[in-house]
Structures are given as structure tokens and as C-alpha cells.
Image (cartoon, rainbow, N blue to C red):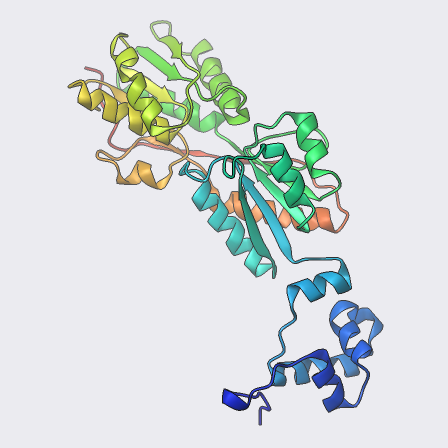
Length: 336
């Protein structure tokens, strides 16, 4: 029969209450949790069984004092209002929970403090860091994280392990899809300056254009911030071009373009075709649904946590590339 205490008579379980019930020292109970290799297996099993019966929960702060570990993973995102980051954070949280860790989230654009200083403060409070799409200069980023085990998401830096989404092949498929629909005049809306992802996506489209049919022309506008309002504001500049196929840096920008063109009486996809990138929730809720490139959010989060676990164990994992995939929806159609 379980001895778990319930109701008003329940007394908070401690290492001392466990030690008293078993007739052993409190230090032995403590070692059973903090240094299990130093406790006899049979004794440790009795300690764990008694702890469970008493409803004992090991406090994270206490565990940190005993083991030097907090059980916390710091997750740093560029801007939590960008719809790319919530599904990534959720995937990281799910994976961290399975590893018996909790997530401490930092929005680098909040709080009114310098992002580097915020990162430096966070790194001293956690066992490891997952830093997503950082734009902090390389030297400043390395200085801020110090010796804290760190994994980057969607950026590569020599000496730091990373998990990135490689959209090169999927963007080529998107562009080929537009050619098959009869489009010849293409317009690339470049992403933010200083963004690793923006640089990679621009390079992918430019490389595609070099091998595209001779009658295909590629023009560019930007850089643009990844924001719905920025896309709306860019609509008039887009309308002034003869481009019928528009490839935007990300879905947020693409959806803003669709809204801005609609305000100008320009229909998508009948007058212009628009392609985004990332496949965030907004891409599937806008009407018509956005043709885009899907990012593997679940895999990005899961692999980042697994890689961070390896780093905290002293291993040195390399960079990992996960491919995006092209999905055709309602914002692309035959050229007018």
C-alpha cells in the first residue's frame, strides 16, 4: 500500500524525512539524487521508493547547488512576434521536457537592453543555450556565451554546432514551378541585412536564375525586414515593376505583399503570383493559402536539443542541415 501522504495531514517531504524513515543519513539521501554512482544500488532503490511514497520533488535550485546543473535550457529568439519562432520554441520545449529540462526563453528584441548583454546574463543561469537566427556579430556572440554549451539554429559560425534549414533545393523547385506556369519576369524580395537565412535564400534564387531559361529575368528589391507591414509598404514598388512572379524572403513579408497589392486593386494569384518561405501558421490561414517552402520546425527543435545534450556531455557535434520542402497552394497561378 502506498504511503504517499495526502490531504490536510500531508507534510512536505524532504531529504531529512526520507533519511529518518530509512534510518540513514541525509547526506546519503542527497547523494542518491546528486551523485547516484556513489550510492549502493539497493540503498538507492530504497531511497527512490520512499521519496516517491512521500511525494518528494527535487527542487531545481537545490539540485543546481548539489550538481552544478540547473535543469534549464536557455532559448534565445530574435523576435517572438515573428511567426517563425513560436512553433520552433514549442518544438524545443517538447524535446526539452522529454530530456527532463525546462526552457527559459529570451526575446532578444524585448526589455530595452542590448541583445549581447541579455545573452551574457542568460548564459550564466542555464546549463546550455539554443540561439535561433541571431544577428549579433560573431565575436560579440562568442564573447556573450562564453563557455556555456551552445547550439545555433539557422546560422553557422565556426566552432559552434548548428542546426539549419537548407531551403536551396526547395526554392529552386518553387522557381521552376513558376516557370512552368508561364512566368518570365521574376522579382526577389530580399530579407533583412545581417540575416544568415536571408543571405542563403538570396544566393539560392540567384544561383537558380543563372541556369533558368533564357527568357527568364530576375530583378530584386530590398533588403526588407521580415514584417507584414513592410510587405504592405512594398506593394506599390512591386506594382511599378512588370514582374508577375514574386518570391519573398519569408511568409510574413509575402502575406503583407498580398494585402498591399489587394489595396491597390491587384489580385493574387490572377495578376501576380507570390511565393513565401517557412510555412508558418499565417501561410495556411491567409486567403488564398500561400504557396511557400515548409520548414521542418519539429525536427529543428528536436535535433537542436539532442545536439545540445551532446555538447553538455563534452562531445563536439558538427553542423546539421535539414531540407525544406516546396508546397504549391493558392497564391500561384498561370501568368496573366
